[in-house]
Length: 470
Ligand SMILES: Cc1cc2nc3c(=O)[nH]c(=O)nc-3n(C[C@H](O)[C@H](O)[C@H](O)COP(=O)(O)OP(=O)(O)OC[C@H]3O[C@@H](n4cnc5c(N)ncnc54)[C@H](O)[C@@H]3O)c2cc1C
Image (cartoon, rainbow, N blue to C red; front, top):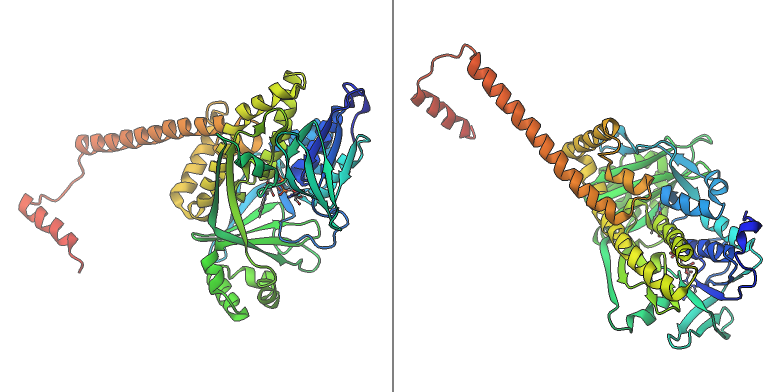
């Protein structure tokens, strides 16, 4: 999976990199550092996921797009991983009366839905001889002075470990980040959204997918939303997003059915009424948090990446992609600055913070857009206008979704460009509307239709009558 000629810029290099957190971003980072010839130690609090029978809580099918693919490509994993996924071409909007209408993504086959991606990335990290995966090692604390980390093993034993660089990839509730919070001039914010999510399974019908695969199915219902993503075993994972207070109102199986009859009637026969009544209560709804912080580094000792640096709400499908791009950007800076940690770490913060903050904000924006605006005719009209303008002027007008999902345009630059495009397009539409009104008025004046000659007073009283409710 990795090329031995490129692997070791210097095999004599003995620097130890400790990657804390063996999730998606930690496992990919291990590949990057190992490829550069560092001795890599990954510490993961859980057991090896590849041996786990049940993975609790966290969704295991994730949408991979351009940024994530580029990051995988750099370590030779793109083709292997993409071949294991399901390509998605469009969103499929389910209206309340059961009609379905697709909204294409733009580029066919570019968004890949992946199942068990963590297993593949972990297996890839393991193929490097200079990488050790230490499962069941939970970080308790670490010292910013010495860099010494204290881990607790599954059986309770404690272990102290030193490394030249600590890479904190331990997720949204990062233990590594706790030490950053004690530093002066460290900015930190965390926001829980009022919505939670709950996962349900839609089984296959006669061995086939119950709905069209290759689509992200969406049931937008203003304050609620359900989405469904296909799995390789022909099931769909349906994720219901809803305010916690609404989850709390539904307490019995019958209430679940009444709720679904009201909002998602077409999904009941597909999930099955009995399964719905049972699975709805299987796990409590999960919370979603958005975390922003800066800087991402502490001296030349420690750096944060992935959700540890920027947890984003999942409504742009970019959390993992942004985390993977973190690894790629760090790697590019390592090339530029000759792996000098004292220069690389601050530069990484300088480059990456504005981009991660921009995607966190965009994910929040999409949280509103996916639930409410996809129902709006004006929103759909604007999407078609944007896509049409993109077709005729592909370099000038690029829809925001395209920039975020199908390019590596820096997130904050994509936002800036989007604001500019919005202004230009809105002004253009206003201009077209004004020209149409002026044109029609001119034609009316120039070629007046044969109107009955109504006296002004009579016209006024007729207009007043229109205001009356009866
Ligand atoms: C419902 C939902 C859907 C999503 N869909 C998408 C999508 O379609 N596309 C996309 O790009 N992103 C998606 N995301 C976001 C994506 O799941 C995350 O951004 C991604 O998992 C972040 O990876 P990570 O490695 O940074 O963190 P995590 O995946 O959280 O991994 C952190 C790891 O650190 C370990 N750890 C924690 N504490 C310690 C400790 N003290 N010591 C040692 N180890 C520790 C944990 O066990 C874990 O394995 C979604 C998220 C949710 C909630």
